Length: 209
Image (cartoon, rainbow, N blue to C red):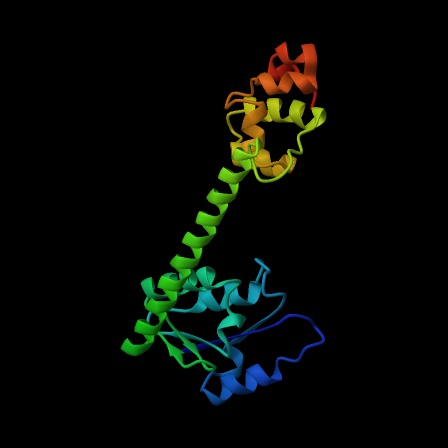
């Protein structure tokens, strides 16, 4: 069974062109799912529904590759999940068809490029941090820890149900910034005395958030 997916960025744009192309490719109208959102959006109920109804032997059909994913690595990961389920991908504009041997070869090249892109980003990030440390900074951007955030961080980190990554996200600081001020148990580090003074000696659980 062919399952179609179309996406437009705004409600002012029409899906007719994409729907017509999918219909011409043999996708039934009631098997076409839609989203109205930007390409960077992580919330796509239409795509979620299309993926949910797809079964072994089916194929997802879309007009262009950029309709499907937020980035090349995201698309590669999505297609990898589909392939493990026995579901193919057909892209009408670009002649991508993972239900064929040639199509799988083409997408294998995409996967290699996506891995290359991730490696380049990682390499640039590490080089930037190294350059920042050489200039006397411990990170690539200014710290944003405040006294109020620090008190909250100490209390949240003292609760073992919270992960450091979640605490950092909740407070709007980087993970490295969080650990620069508190340890894994919520105890203040030396840097914290600049913000808390004598209060740094108090146990995290006794601090008001």
